Image (cartoon, rainbow, N blue to C red; front, side, top):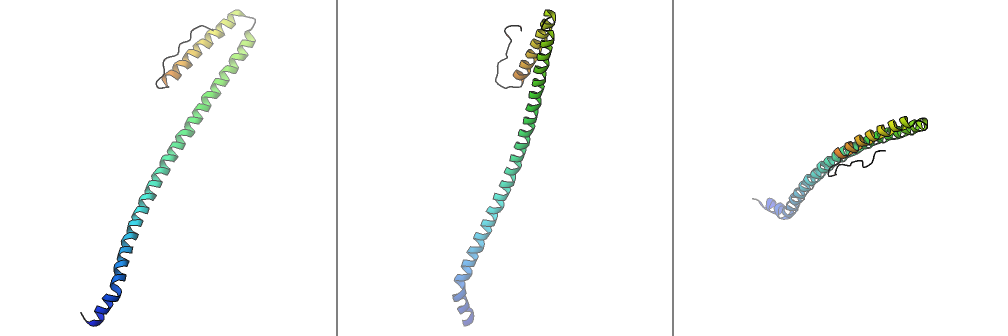
Length: 123
């Protein structure tokens, strides 16, 4: 090794060593950044799926609620029309009990950890 090479190594050796450390740290940061981006991407997909599931559940619940409103309004109209005929009132009461029992059974079947609900008195 000649004098010029020794001088260059003495002058630039520490700088090259620090540049090597900087390069290693930069690669580590880049690797961490890629891991974080992958995690964020996965989290975004999961949140999107959860939001889609929530929107579907809200739509289903809204549909069921609207069906119940329609049923109640229909029963109210039928009761008003049958108010003077005891046989019609009894038929509507029987229909309402059957609907109530079916609704209670459906709710119980689709709700984990609940006991069956029984109607105690006929309407």
